[in-house]
Image (cartoon, rainbow, N blue to C red; front, side, top):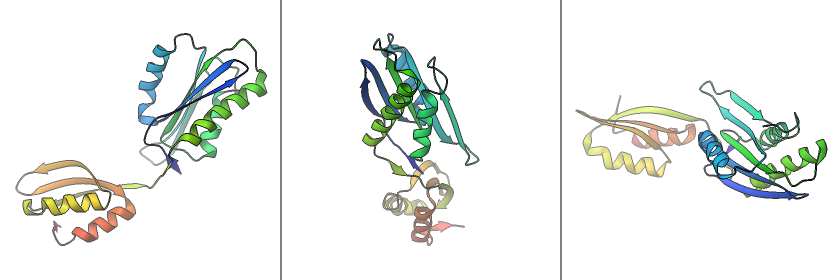
Length: 189
């Protein structure tokens, strides 16, 4: 499975109709959809599809044709996301009608092509399941722990400073194992 870290955009023109596809991290989906509707008041349709992992590690999917004939736009967009194994990602395709009806097959091709083209521009990241740990250590080891976090791609999501230091850290399973092995001598059990 793959995901993206930033937004990508690509425009496809078919028989004077414009299909502007936006590929985004799922966390930005609702904000971008509202912004696009304000930026493109004359656009006919805002076709959406997304896939994300919920807290139970299940893939949740949704798509909306936004007035296009049923099954001609959102479903093909979602199928492209599925085929490329994208998760925690969304695609919003803004369509400006060019005056020529494309027909069912033409719409399916246009939306599929628009999503495929924007995905080709994207820098896809390999998804690795992340784990979160809470570690406790002495103040004197803060620089060492933060160095090992940088070296091992560990994200420090929370820091607490009391009688000792407590960090909540997140990383892929493999990175976490390397990190914990490197800092084993200084973390408190």
